[in-house]
Image 1: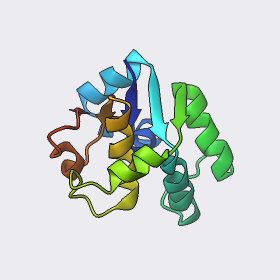
Image 2: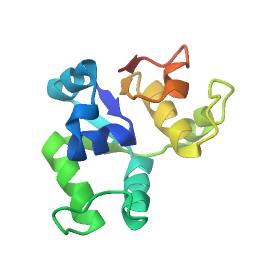
Image 3: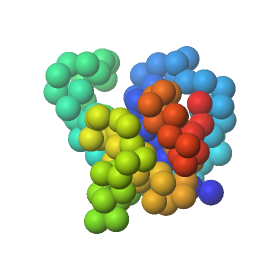
Image 4: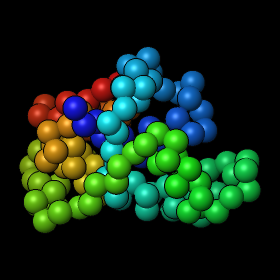
Length: 129
């Protein structure tokens, strides 16, 4: 079964695994992981703003590629159906990226690994935390 990773889950795994819950760690260990393509942009933005520790001195591209490769994460594109779903009344979240991530999980009928309380409050969204 496919499991979607919220952006911060990828960052927690890469930079501070102690921040992951036991359930999140177990889900990551199970494999068959994906993320919404907007997560790549979010990571690049945080990287450019200096909010990600660059211990290895690599580019944002290399940092993102390393995470995707290490976790064997597939990147799922935003489709017209996902874009429409992200604008539905299901989402109370104001953050467009989080709406798209949640809509991606719903569209693919996948669980979402997230610590985000607003996403976890969506009744139709199966969340792992």
